[in-house]
Image (cartoon, rainbow, N blue to C red; front, side, top):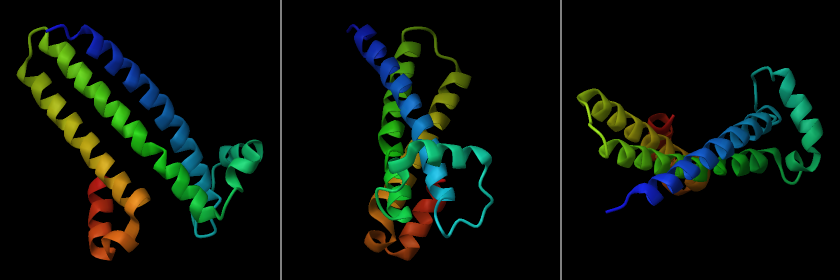
Length: 142
């Protein structure tokens, strides 16, 4: 079985997932600081991003904008998860050590937990899950 095409596309998926995750995180953070319930002091770069983004932060209520940019992170997590599977396939072609095996398992568990937390927080929300289940999934996923 030739794994090279899968490894190639998994690497591309991880790269695009990283780009999407970085951009989505910046926009989600700026949208969070632009929200009225944000009690933390906003870093200086958020004001510049909000000013430069213009309509990207005013297309809806601040809570909807924050939720929208939080939802962008789910595809990023999934793409990075595909990249991790490709990395595992790449390592299977060579010798695998016990340290690699544990590192891969921890990476996979962390990505699955983050994906579940994002799905519960930004996609389903407390209305669909109920407050206790939502809070538990939020704690596990973050």
